[in-house]
Image: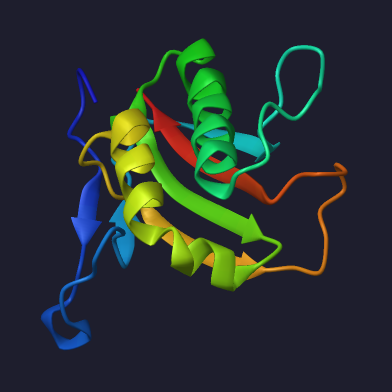
Length: 137
């Protein structure tokens, strides 16, 4: 964050080193909270842009970051993600590519995260939906 202290990652040693996420994120006083609605891999016409899981993950994450940027933030301001997937095995099978797509959008910023497998998402054809909380200076 620009004029205030950055988000502080909280990773207690007792929990071991997290990989690709943080156990907790402490926001500085005075930041504005931005709650980003669940985003899927669709374009401005609300059409899913691809069928493959890594591509959908990348597009959904880019849509989340588009909202964050519209509010004046960037990847470094994202404090939390909740990722909903329709097939956990598909996520795990493509984990290396998903990680690369994540870094394309977020760099080395690792907010607190949760991944939840769900039976279905509201948008037909969507395999992943991502919601976020950001702290904008």
